[in-house]
Every structure is written in C-alpha cells, then in structure tokens.
Length: 210
Image (cartoon, rainbow, N blue to C red):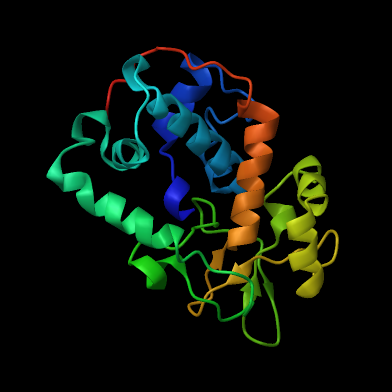
C-alpha cells in the first residue's frame, strides 16, 4: 500500500513482542494485503519509531527509518525515501476518475498500492470496460466496512462515485491496479488510530534490524 508497506517479519514482531494483536497475522501473510491490517501494523511501527530509544523523533527520521532501518535513518542512502514520501504525500490520488486516476507510481516514482494477495488473487469482477474491479468488501471485515460507511468524507465520496453497500469498488489507476484514494487512506488511518493506538503506551522493546 505504498507508504505503509510492512514486512511479514516486522508485523509478526509487533504482534508477538509489542502486543499488537487486533489482527492475527502470524502464519497468515496474505492479511497484510488488506488495507486495515496493513495500516494497523504500519501505524504501530511508526508509533514505535517515533519514540525510538525513548527519544521523540522527527517525521523525517521516522520515514527514513521505516524504509531503511533505524541504523540508516540519517544515512544518505535513505534521503531518497524522505524526498519520495514528501512528494507522494502531496500527490495522493482521489476517486475523480475511477478507472483512470493517477497512481502513486506515476505521481512519485514509487510502487503503486498493491492490494492483491501473495497468490495474485484480488477477487476481481470483470466489467464491460475491461477493468477487473477489486472490492473493498473482500479486503475488510464487516465491522471495518461499517466504520468506513459511517465516516462522513468516505460516504460522501462513495455516494458520489455510485458505490453500494456490499459492493464497494477500489479505484484503479491507468494500469488497472487498485489503489486507495486520499479520502479512503485518511479514513482508514483515523479509524485505526482511534480504535487501536490512541491510548497505547510505547514499549522500549528493541528490534533487531533485518
């Protein structure tokens, strides 16, 4: 999912060592291809990095450490990650053109948000436009979908694009790859933070870098 990609090993460490267990990720790597799960573990890791070694860290440190590890957070090799992140943050696509909106790949030269699982399955439904739609409902629990439908910005965007309960399409870029719009991305982040992370204290447990 672009900015928030988390390795399986990192997710399992967050699950087993730091107690982030809202999603059972151990032995189930395909779960990381679901927006809420991906965002949950990504946000958990960001929160840990933000207070790495009990020191309040800058956004730049967190982003560079997220991509390159804490040992390389100030190394020149991770500077490009920060520049790319800054560019992507200003260029997140909307749902203005459901089948032809810009992708993160085109906006900032980074990987587009991947929503297929490890086997390549995305529960597609081929339409007469040639786009095999991936549905939100196949990538989120009923509870999480209800949270999205209750979000004022999301319901406004989904209503405008003609989405129906039980059959909400992901937007697709010009290469027919699914992505999250800026409204959806913001909503998922807000829901994850408010439900799971707002009251959690950060444990000082060390992480051995890959």
